Amino acid sequence: MTDNTNQFTLIRAGMLVDGTGGPPVERATILIEGDTIRAIGPESEVLAPEKAKVIEYDYRGKTVVPGLVDCHVHLIGIGDGRAGDDLTLLPDELLTLQAARNAKTHLDSGVTTVRDCGAKNRTTLVLREAMNLGITTGPRLVLSGRPMAIVGGHLSYFGIQATGTDECRAAARQLIKEGVDFIKITATGGSTKTSFPWRPSFNVEELRAICDEAHSFGIHTAAHCVATQGIVNSLDAGVDTIIHAIFKDPDGRRVFQPEIAERIVKQDVYVNPTLMASEFGAGGHIDFLEQKKESGGLTPDEQASLDQMYRNRDERIDEYKAMRAVGITMVSGSDSAWSRYKMGDFQSELEANVIAGMTTSEALVSGTLDAAKSSRVDELVGSLEIGKKADILVVDGNPLADIKSLSNVVDVFLNGNLVDRKVSP
Ligand SMILES: [Zn+2]
Image 1 (cartoon, rainbow, N blue to C red):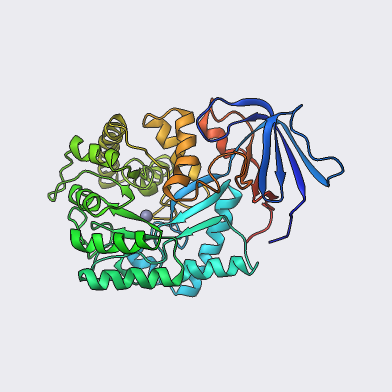
Image 2 (spheres, rainbow, N blue to C red; image 1 turned 135 degrees about the vertical axis):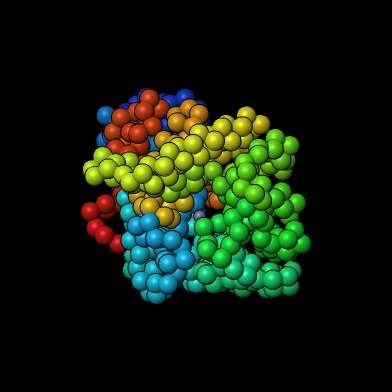
């Protein structure tokens, strides 16, 4: 990292959307000192100190928004449709290289902070070491290292299988010792072949042991839940973010339970709905089959499975709306590069939130300030406010009119520095 203290930067914006959900500001200027925002306001009022060394960027025809915060990624993912069970067979060295590539791809696409929700062994922690040494660049990292799983449970192949409260505490302490920023727990089964997706994994005592350890060291927890009982257990144990939040009974039937949703609100727990990766986008399989249908056609089995995916999408949108109706704060996280959802397209997740009922402004907040709050980095990033780090995305067009314009990336700033989007990691 270059030392840029006392270096001033002025960014002139045609329109500025600060990430807090407030109205946009026309013709605004941001003054940055080093890596920190010092002033924001009308062009005529924001000036650099006299005689200061100033770099100026003119984005008067563009829109300036905070760097996006993707609160759910898997940096080691390939995104080619392979199952996690197969991904984990690849050597750690290869996965670390892939993580570096994904990190740079996401940064170039405008995501300046990621929360990684589970990687194999020490791969992502090694990536952070490489970034600190200046070997590679990428977004700000919020890392869980390997997720906490039960024997044979979801993501257990990434390196931790804990049984009983003592092993859970020991594993949590081991992760904390290695420098993780939060603990990811798989509180139900999932796509892992040896797991049971619609049943809880850890019992409440085990979950509570993990949460107590995390909280006593000042870090948070996030739990994967694709079944109702996992959500309830996580709430009983004091988990901070519920991931997926799918309300299913052990027989796989979807039964939304408003009183549980209300508990989520009452306990100030965030929900990361992962629309694209779960039933809304089916992890990229809907797009994949639609493309296949266009190019060569589908077999009857494939068509039937596509029809089923659309029915699941409709159900999921209803569930998502019901959660929002009781007041749950939805935080955007892509879950890429899981399944077929490659990294570098967090914007699709924000668009999915709009299709499922958010306004464009709400979707932007869910992928900036609220995602930063759930990742416990909102004092640093997530909005364009005085005192925060200058993580900035410049786009062509107006994302409040059309959320898709967030993909028209012009420039990205990380810590006040313009990201070189031409170099690979
Ligand atoms: Zn995930």
